[in-house]
Image (cartoon, rainbow, N blue to C red; front, side, top):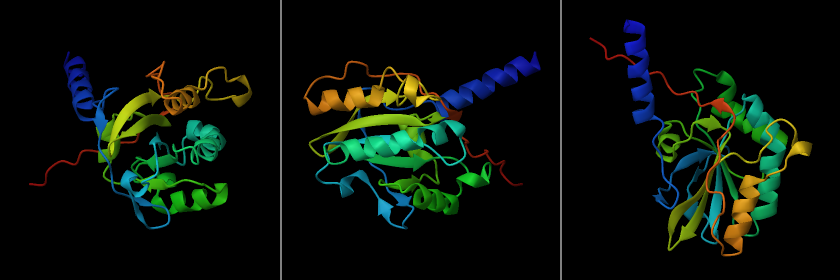
Length: 205
């Protein structure tokens, strides 16, 4: 009985702390996060952008690794059209040292990232957006210097085999936005590794 009660408490804590996020059509908040080049980046630093493909991802997760080339291609395809990629690592490096800032710098250089790769050290940005997985995508549209959430979820419908992808959710959403159309499929289920949240520290006596 105690175990069931503890599980319920843990679930409530998770839902109230981590699972909240912006709903489709809501204005989202900007952020100021450290890029791998040492610069602080926010969405307002891209005045000509029509919107953004925000991707919460990381170094160690096999799903994130499987999507690396597709994330690079998304940026190459849509950066010049006004929807650049911004990648954000929300993981606690104490839980997974491979996700440290230093390793972020290393992988960005090795893979030739053409987009910012930001470290969400406080994890507040991930919490505000309601990110739960790596990768987890949020497509936002710029409206009068504010950012409206238009899509959230997976990049496509096959996390393991790019040759078997049938639905490109992010590309479909961005193409519709570029054509001034409403996004047909607003949400999908993000598939990936769970975000490694920081352990809640007990107060010292």
